[in-house]
Image (cartoon, rainbow over all chains, first blue to last red; front, side):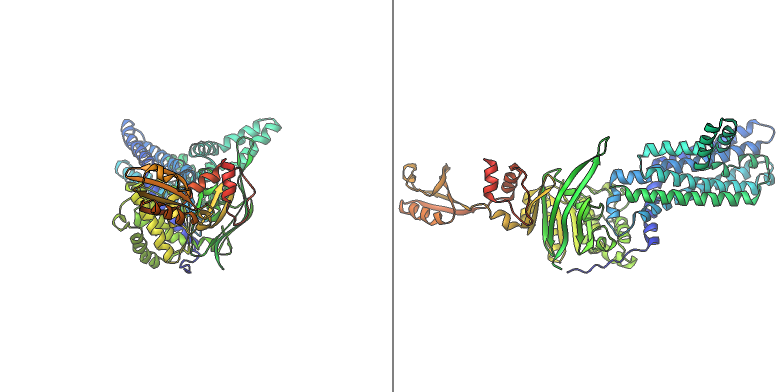
Length: 268
Length: 327
């Protein structure tokens, strides 16, 4: 009888292998290039609009650039993350992978790691382009390159990874299009949690309870939004950044654990 | 241990529709696959072949019953280390090359990187895909995808191969190549379990088969056992006598005129000698005497016509039973 030559693979080997294939899969996707192109066009628009203003042209570049970064990273996280697991089930590519001695949780972690790799590459490339443009076109070089800008850019990356984990969670139990809708919905609400809390304060006790619950349960993306601080040079306490990173780490872990549990229960 | 795969009283139900009503896809299925055998799993579309294969590959858990690979529960890591699986329509990440695909599945199989690099040329050679190793999978033909699918199933040299319709969609040449490959793998010591509805392929290479119909196993065992339940017929072709002389030959079940002579069919083997001596006695020249092989297709047609009966483990539906239902 033939003796098995393989041994139970190590978790990191499985995650790395799945991540690498996912990374290649995403960077070959046309959606990615469309999103990146949109971001670059937004940078171009920033240059154009900055020529039309006499006061603070660097602020226009700062705002447009940050918006381009947020939209690009967020769109990649949601649009590619939403199809990540759903596509595997639709095309049944997951069947062959799961017939190997790996766990479904490792598979989900690998897919997510691949997506994070793409987000990181996109963030580095667009960030470099943004900073270059800012350096070349901003008349007040020193004031533009503040510490707040780098903190804000870092939080854009953290925010997009959190969005990706949400999209992966939705992708574990629904179709690609539904995952996009769910993710966009949660991100939109999550960016307006303070408004929901305000609404809760102004509502009757029953409605207030509902709004408070929504504000408690849904992820709060306002922790990562430093647009105003960047534009006006307001100081950002380090604790805010630390809190944002901690909060996102917990949320990402929670989303991935839930996605793993869903995938575990889902029939192929 | 004499069995590579064991399925004991397995039920599988799916919940479908708005009310999520359970639909029973497999019903009290039991079978055993002997070590080193080529086991053909035969059934029409929708009979439950792929569902059972998913259970064997550890992709699902049965609603009831036990599925074991070398004594390990099929979905366990230990079981999955010992199987290679090819789905019915293998879908792969099409931007990968054949080489990258094998590296990927090699890593998922738990092979060390060096071992993967050693194994890739061997498996590519055995499926005849060495020439396409650096080509992206989206440029592969269906037959090439099937073969690279078999290669990924072989990358960790598993003792058992579970293949879902490995010959479907292939041209006759491709089917022959896959048949030859399966025979070669069997001779190397692999146990092969494959589903098919191409009965001639099953008949040609399998030593064991199981028949499934509407989620129930109608029988399983050595293929000869299935074919021998039919009474043997022998075809005699002769010439040199006319039709009036033939009436004296009592043993013929049927006799038809063919260009340049006659073709007579004799039931059983006892009648052959008598028919031949009578024909020679009348001055006929015998051109050929050939036993008529009962095909699995013939058997399958008969079995499919019959009502569902409670199955008996390892049993083969008798010819009489099948004939009764056909009538």
